[in-house]
Amino acid sequence: MVMNDDTMRERVEALGPAERILQTLLTYSDHMVHNRPGMVTKDARTATGVKWAPVMTRLETGEGETDPKRVVYRLDKVGKKTRRVKVGCLDADAKTIRFAGDVVGEYRLPGIFPEVATWLYGQVAEVWKLDNDFAARWASWAFPQEHRDLKVALAAFMLVQTRAGEPVIEDGELLFHDDDFRAVGEAMCLTRRKDGKDINPKMLLRIGDLLAVPGVAAINRRLGFGRSARNPAMGRYRKAVTKWLRHREDNERMLRGLVKAGYRKTVMRLAQRVGYKPMSPKFFEILRWKQVQADDGRRTMALTMDVAPAETWTELTEMEICQKIVAERPSYKRIVGMVPSDMGITRAIMAAAVETRGVLSDQDLIILTPTLEDLDLLNVPVVASRWTAACERAENARAANIAKRVKKAETAEKLTEAADAALKNAVADVVRGLRVYLAVDTSGSMSGAITAAKSYLKQFVQGFPLDKLTVCVFNTKAREVTIKHASTKGIEHAFKGFSASGGTNYGSAIRQVFADVRPADDEDVIMLFVGDQGQSGTFTNAVEESGLNPVAFGLIDPWNYGSIVEDTAVKLGIPCFKLTDEMFGDTYAVSRTFRHLIASTPVRKTMRNGARPARVSLVDTILKTKLLAKPVWA
Image 1 (spheres, one colour):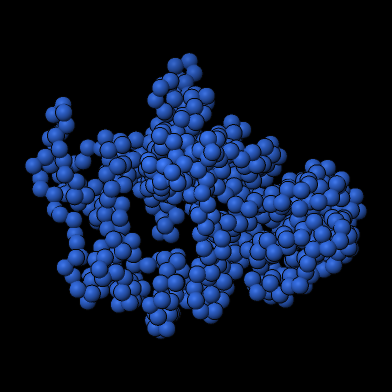
Image 2 (image 1 turned 135 degrees about the horizontal axis):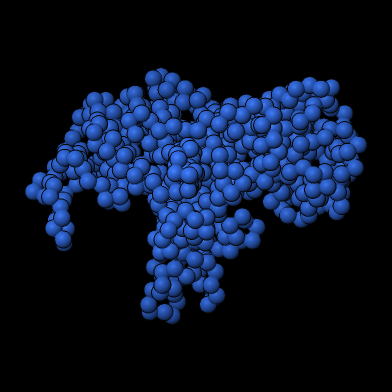
C-alpha cells in the first residue's frame, strides 16, 4: 500500500486509540517469561492485576513439628545483596502459598507468565481491530527492535490472524487476492539478521507456547482465528517451524552451528512439536538424537543408528582446552558447560575466550567484568582493549548494574560511562526536535524519598542533550539546577545537598523557571515530573499562561500520594506517561523504554511561526515501514 502525505495524516488521526495502546505497551517493563521460580500476588496497580517476584524454597521442620514443610522465601534485591524474606509455606498442591493459614500467593515454576502473555497479546489484538494493515506494519517495525516479548507476541498474532491472502471472487471471477499478513509472521520467524536481533530457536519455541496459553487461545477464538473450541489456533506456526527446520537440515553447517551454540535440545523440541520428518538420518546424527520405535510402529528412520556420545573436555589439559577454544570458537555458555568442574574457568581459559573472535559478545564481556577483574585480566593490554571497546559499544544500561559488583573504582567508572553512553545513543534520534523540562519535588512530603528520586534521575537524565534540557527543584518556590556534565557524576553533583522541606507548589516550577526558557520554533515540549503529587487541584493555569504548550507529561511517582500531575494532563488534553519503579529495576528496559516513550509522544501539527516539525511520531514511522517479506528460500 502506497500512502501520500494526506492519506498518512488521516490515518494518524484515526489511530489515536492505537497510539495510546502502543505507548502503554512500549513502556511496559514486566517480563512475559521468567527463567526461575517465582510467586504471583494480586496487585491492582499493575496492568495485569498481578505481580511476580523471585523466590526459593527450602525444606524446614518447625519447632515442635516432626514433618518438614516446604518454606517459601522471597528474594529481594537490596543494593549488592539479595535478602531472603519468608513469605509462607507451600500447600500439598505445590502451588498455593499460605502464611498463618491465609493464602498469600501462588508458586510458579520457571516458564511463561500467562497473565502478562494474555495482557500483551490482548493489546496487540486491540490494535488489530482498529487497523489490520497498521498491525502488520507494526510487526514489521518491531522485528529489528530488541523488545523480545513484543516480537514474540506480534509474530504469534500475525501467524494466526485471518488475513491470509485468500482469493476475492465476484460472480465466479477472481478479482484479486487479499493481503497475506500471515506471511509477515512467517518472515519474522524465518528471516536471519547479522546483528542477532532476529527470532532465535528459543523465541520460536516460545511463540508456540504463547499460542497455547488459555487466555491467548480464548482471544483468538473471540476474533474468529481458530475453528476448534478445544484446541488453540496455531495458524501457520507449524508450517513456519517446518520450513525453519528444513532449511537448517539442508544447510548442515547451520544445524551444527545451532548445536554448538547450545540449542540442540531446543531444536529437538521444535521438531517434536510440529512432527517434523527429516529427509535423512543425518539430522538425528548431528543432534545426537537416539530414535525409539513408536507404539504404532510408524517410524522407519535411524532406528538402528548409534548416537555418538556427547563431547567431553574432562580429559583435556588447560592448554588443550585453550587450543580447542581458538580452533573451534565455541560460545562462552558452551565453554562453561564443557570445562571440567575441578578445573573451572582459569585465567588462561578466560584469556583465550576473550582473545578469540566470536566467542564472547560485547554484552558477554560487560557481564563478565567482575570475573575479568578477579582474574587480573583487565591489566592485560589485549584483554583491556577488547573490554574497553565493548564498553564503548554498550547497547543498554546493564553496565551500570555490573559497576556495583566490581572492586576497583576505575573499572566501575568505565562501566558507568558505558551505561551513560548507551542511554545517549538509544535516545539520540528521538530527542531531535524536542525540548525537555524536568521538575523535581523537594517539599517536606518527600522526606526519605529524595535519595530514591536521585537514583531515578541518574538512570535517564544524562540521555538528554544539556542544551535541550531545563531542570529545576521546587517546593513552594522553584530554582533552576545546572547540570555541568551529561553523566551519572554530573547528575550526582547537580543534586548534591538537596533535602526535603517546605510545602508543594507544582505551578512554581512552571512560572518561576520553565516559562523563562523558550523552545525553538520547530521544537515540541515534554515536561517530566519527579515527585509524590502531594498537592490538590491542578496547575493547568500555570502551564497555559507559560505558552509552552507541552505535548506530553512524564511522571515518576512510586509514592502515590496524589494525582495533580495526572489531573493536569487530563485538563490539558495531553497524555501523561507514568514511569514505574519496576522499569527502573530492569537495567535492560531503561534505555529502551525512554526511547519508546519519547518517540511515542505526539508531534504538534502546526509549529510556531509555521516551522516544519523536526520530529516524526512513532505512528508515522510504523505507517511508513514496509511489510516484512519472507526470505527467498522460504
